[in-house]
Length: 128
Image 1 (cartoon, rainbow, N blue to C red):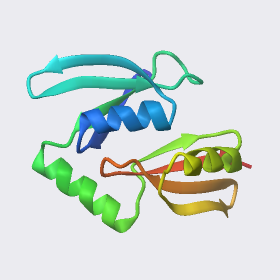
Image 2 (image 1 turned 120 degrees about the vertical axis):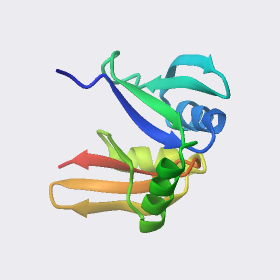
Image 3 (image 1 turned 60 degrees about the vertical axis):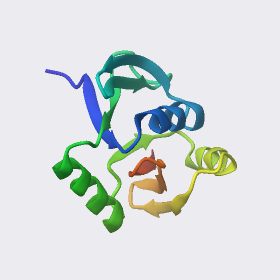
C-alpha cells in the first residue's frame, strides 16, 4: 500500500491551478474536463513523480463547510516540507503570498502558515 493521491478542496480550480503552479512552483500533471469541474492534479518538481495533489472542487456542502471551518479556526489543511524555510518564506512573500504565521520554531520543526487564495491555509515546515 502506498500514497498515490491526496486531495485539497478549492473554491476555484482555475485560480488554484494558477496559484499552485505559478506561485508555489508545482507542475500540472492532469487536467481532464468532467462536466462542470475537472480532474486536476499537480506534482512537485522536487518530489516523487507518482505522488499527486488533487485540486478538488468544494462543490459538496459538507466539504465546503469543513473547509470554511478549518480556515476560520486557522488550521492548515496540508503541509509541505522545505529545506530552507526562511528562503521559501522570502520567495513567497515577494510573490504576494499572505502569511498568517511567519516562520516560527515549534520543537523539532520551524513552520509558517499562508493562504492559498482558494479557501485553505497551508503550512510550510522545515525539520530541525
